[in-house]
Amino acid sequence: MKIDKDFQALLPTLSEQECNLLTESILNEGIRDPIVIWQEEQILLDGHNRLKIYLENKQKLNNNELPIRELSFSNKEDAKLWIIMNQLGRRNLTTERRKYYLGILYNKEKQQGQRTDLTSGQNGTKLNTAQRLSDENKVSVRTIKRAGKYVENLDKITVDAGLKKYKEKILDGRIKLSVSEVDELANNDEYTEYLEDVFYQLEDKIVKSATEFMYNLNKSLKKEKEISEFNKLIYKLKTRLDKLISDKEVEDMIISLRELINKAEIKMEEIIKNGNSSYNTLKSGLRDLYFGFKNKIQTTKRIEGVDYLINLFAKLLKEANLRKKDLEENK
Image (cartoon, rainbow, N blue to C red; front, side, top):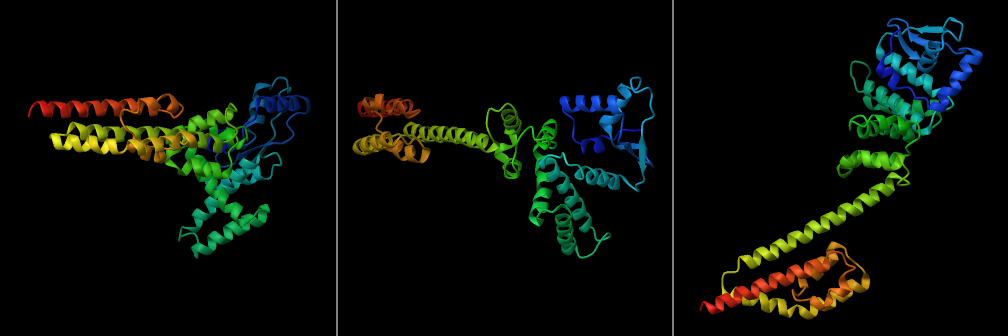
């Protein structure tokens, strides 16, 4: 008898408590349900846990014969479909795992409908597949189609991302992810490098939901982007000062800056009053900041990075004044 990893991966894993309860039941009552094998290939289809417990406790079971049921299948895909259908008949499936099984069924039959050598009327086949699965499982057609997408998205954020160990935890409900959260994580490239982080934080109850994690992450990424934009703005101004080559250019720059003093004070007071530190708001204020705005440092400390920027702007102004003085002395 052989174990196929693909088949085994379709089956739910038992928790330690569940395994202990099953072991106790088998030792007390024996194996009531036979294990199921694929007759032609002698591959185990159902009963992996029962087989393991039987082999570990064979003597305690008085070497009783292991009950086996053999089923015939023409190929591996048919055997897989039997496993899924058999699991869907169980009452103790989690919502996530039931959804995953329905999605596999829908995707497999939909894929078959796309092959012209297997069926005709492709669109009709897709509709009939979803409708039939909907009727058989007493759920809506939309639920069936969403389940198909759920399979693709879940595999993408776990198996394809090298995080297969989290797939079982999600399907068993140990890590809670809604269909929309799985879809968002799978189809937004910004989250790709943070997938293990979100799983870890959900498992350790650091965040209540993936939505909360994504909100916190977006907030952090936005701040990083704003800091990057600030740095670009500073670089542009510094570069502009470095390129000043004539007295006229330096004087125009300083005159322009002095004309903005009043506007800068008003803008900064608005920012402080509203407590708004978003880039778009600060950007307009920073463009108006006068470099010698030292008296405002104490009142702007609660706006992150403003005093740092003020000092930088002040330094740039000093450099501009020195450049102007050098030009005057060289006349």
